[in-house]
Amino acid sequence: MTDQKTRLHWVDENCRQLQEIRTEFADTRPFEGITIGTGIHLEPKTAALLLTLKAGGARVVATGNLSSTQPATIDYLRSHGIDVHAEATQDSGIHAQSLQKILAEKPDMLLDNGGDLFASYLEAPYEGLIGVTEETTSGRMRLTPLRDQLAMPILVINDSPIKQFAENKHAVGQSIFESYMRLTNRATNGKRVAVFGYGACGMGVAVNFRNAFASVSVIDVDPVKSLEAHFDGFQTPSREMALRKADIIVTETGAENVITASDLDLLKDGAILMNGGHFPTEIDVPSLQSVSATRATYAEEGIKTLVQADGRRFHVLCNGHMANLAGPRPLGNSLESMDIGFALQSRCLERIAKGESGEDECIVPVPRAIDEQVANAYLSPFRQ
Image: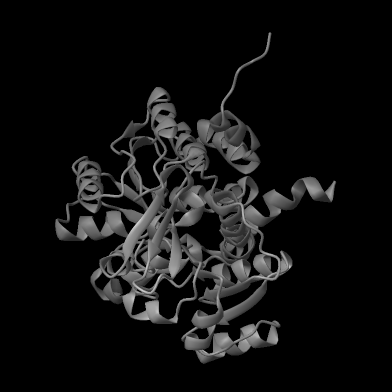
């Protein structure tokens, strides 16, 4: 008889490092008596992470991020003893309420993704928080100005070189390209693509579209990054020229209002806009809609078509939310990349729980010893 399983089972069974760490944590119990509050995309790969923390003795209370929460993942986590306060929503007010429900439990540690959870904590701090891990560039950017006020270990997973190349460059690049194909089903051959931002994520996006026979331009406010893109073989035109020629526009900056209504006169008929950044603010969709008529919303496809008074149309994917975790059947980054990234998360949380990180490790990258441990664990099967 066939053993009926879901994608959640497939993901969990294929996260090799997390499986190994889970077995170890079940013996060592580094989180015994500790409550970990999490604010991270609730999708199958994060479920594997949260179950690993639970195996280590943690009481896990979890919520998600805007637009990326998957109901099947909530059900799966609850059936495995995880307290979840989340729902699939693009409403920031509902999201804020979910964050408050996590903080009402006064977790001993926080695992954050984008800084929302910790920002809410700072509005009403409580005693007993011993440390934090932050997953993203966006979150680190929010925390850095506050460093002098924070007297606790805060380890930034995104600042690990492993996460930069394995997840951000390679996996985000793949998944944003995959999302474009999944959402539009349109060819990239010969299309002109403008990628805003040439950090690790933007670099990966640019490479993947170029590998799919598109003509790719890169726009970055940092002239040094623009020069790097030029030496990597990408076109580096002015911002205005890039927008005028682009068939596809992708934002990967971590900034706000990268594309706004003031850019509409530059966009060509039929241009497609998509965001790969964490927050749905890189493409200012409300301002675009305020001066456009909505011609069609293909709800099941995650596509909204807006039309200008002169008849030009443009298409916004996933309403400006992070395209690889929004829209129909979102898969996010590859299993292998997230397995590595969440191994880093698990080890960093373990380090904080064991008291091995002090106040001097406030908003710092993953310690080198953990990077080496995770790298060796991943490479081990390839060395046999």
